[in-house]
Image (cartoon, rainbow, N blue to C red; front, top):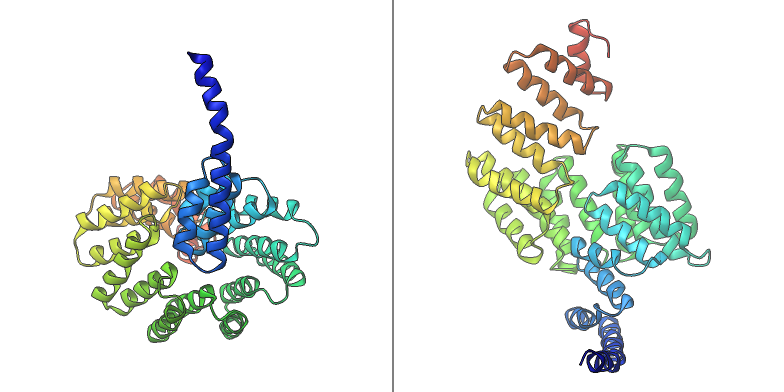
Length: 369
């Protein structure tokens, strides 16, 4: 009996592989015609037995801005330079900076010298990671190397714009993002980066108009809809913000930042239980991201539940040890609990990280940091 079963399985295996290969080819053909939903269905039919299908599905989901699921398929594809490059980009989008750095370095190591576009993309991701870490020397070094590989890459231009923005060069950043748009009119990242920059600089109307222009190019861009919701929230138009953020979750139920911003809206309304629910969902989706833990801590602090607040703040700084502001929040809560040793220790941590107010506190109390 078992022998007959084995023979049957061995007979069927070539059939399964042939079917998977056929679905893969149909998916590639559909994707080339811009039929992404159809292509996705074909790729999903083949992923169980075909690594190339997993790679193609991951890249397609990345293009559709479903970065979490895209990462899962790319991790389980092959270990090629292509897979590592796209995985690094998805990890960076999810703020998984250390993972993105490792994947980008691996991609650069694996990429053939002649594959300039792939190498440029991986180098740009690596530059982005260094920029977030405020290591601008390395960030500029890698982005210049990326430019040498592919001078017209919209992705490289976008990361260069991000570096310029982080360094406070807003005019240069604006010009670079606009150049990225002119290079690739369908490049939603440039619209997103411009909108984000305007939000940080409190130019909310400019942000909204820029993001709406981007949505005319790609009406289902999750990133653009999210950023538009954030701009509305900062402007005080909460209902518009809620509509955008709920749309984001409808398109991608794992988009962590949308849950955090919805939590912020209910926090500002004093609806702490609803705020907690959104923040906790964010921690379940992305337990290695610190923001939601910090926001839960803030909510408990607002409710004068200092012990719970401190626990969540501490979880946030365990994940992001460079979060000087949260060390200050912990210090303030220890002060309210009349625990001077813990208060001092956390102000010292913040001061060592360059937090100006914490440094002044240490100086005024005669504490070296």
